[in-house]
Amino acid sequence: MSDASARARPFDLDDLRGASSGFLAGLVRRVLDDPRWLFGFLRRVWPITAVPFTNWVFVWRWDDVREVLGHDRDFPVPFGDKVKELNGGPNFLLGMEADPVYWRYQQQVMQAFRFDEAAKVVAPLSARFAQEIVEKSDGRLDAVQDFITRVPTLISRTYYGVEIEPDIMVDFGHWTIAMSTYMFGDPTDIPGYKRAALAAGDRLRPLIDRSIANMKSSAVGFDTVLARLIDMQRKGAAGLTDEIIRCYLIGMISGFVPTNTMAAGHILEMLLRRPDFMAAAQAAARSGDDDLLERCLFEAMRFMPLNPGPFRACARDYVLAKGTSRATLVKAGSKLLASTQSAMFDNQFVERPNDFNPGRSPADYMLFGWGLHWCVGAFIARAQITQTLKALLLKQNLRRARGADGQLQLLGPFPEHLVVEFDA
Image (cartoon, rainbow, N blue to C red; front, top):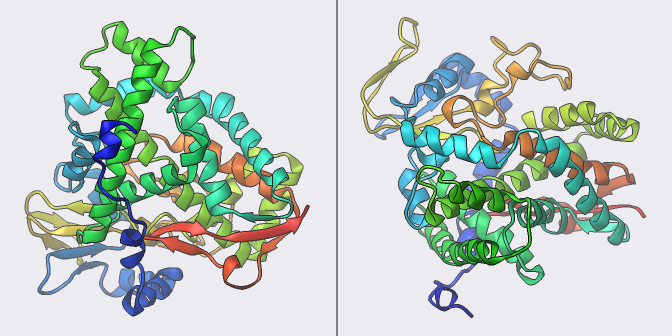
């Protein structure tokens, strides 16, 4: 055991489970399970909901959501300090404003995570890993823990270059979920979420540091994201220290494994709920039309996206929807939820939003955010999720397991378990 591992705070999954249990949490989940009716009512009656006697503002309309997310200096992301805390120093793209450091980081990250490798590398790796898991499952599979979370974890090892040993595969997924929950899904600072995230960071940082050190000392040539970052460092890339390399990897992993777990878990849940969605996705998978399959899957995700929307803070007094009858002064220091989920069902901007339409315009979607903090890894995520779920959709008689095992179970806000069965 390394010194860093020995000093790590205890990691307890109950810290994540506790906040998502109880009557109130269950009631909120039921309301948010299909909130289209509620969002539609609020868009008409109270489109910018400034909650009295609090500093919370909820934004529901398509155009107002875009205004908030498009004005990142007026409505910056509120979790930069949490990102730095878990990284052990530097900030990362998801927690930054658009300044020269942000653009340098983005350029270096995109140089290491090459756009064309989503199709050339990530898709075939995902397909291979997914097929191997499905074929070994003998017709019954925990489609979240042992499949949907496992495949991006394997990608983090083979493509990113992080040394994740087989015996910590499940733990690694839990650590990244704890960190993502605390950074991006914890606006009220739930103590258990923080404890779990700090303990997870204590484990992930030394793992990344060892991977960097071992890659530097290896005489074998590798073509991984980590190897490219080290090569860029050797060639004098501006500011690219080991600490910044660790920051990039933690940032991309904590935005990859948990996000894809939630996205794919929600997609699968919607396919199981809606036979028409399932039939369309399976027909696309069996036809070999991966483009159509991807469109089917992410149209299903529109009905159950990652979350109601991203959180923002108000940096200075700002009149939202200025010049309209709904114009609202948002005071400096306010917390905002810009509901991309509501926006994607705003029939003032999205044609027939309640229809399942894999052919709809890409402009109708905000699944991976919008504006400056649109997910930089979205192209990798889409390829990985599509090829992972394809392996499952090709099986005959895909269905939920009976009883509680076949229901989606959560770890904090993230999917943790969902057992499915199929004809082996």
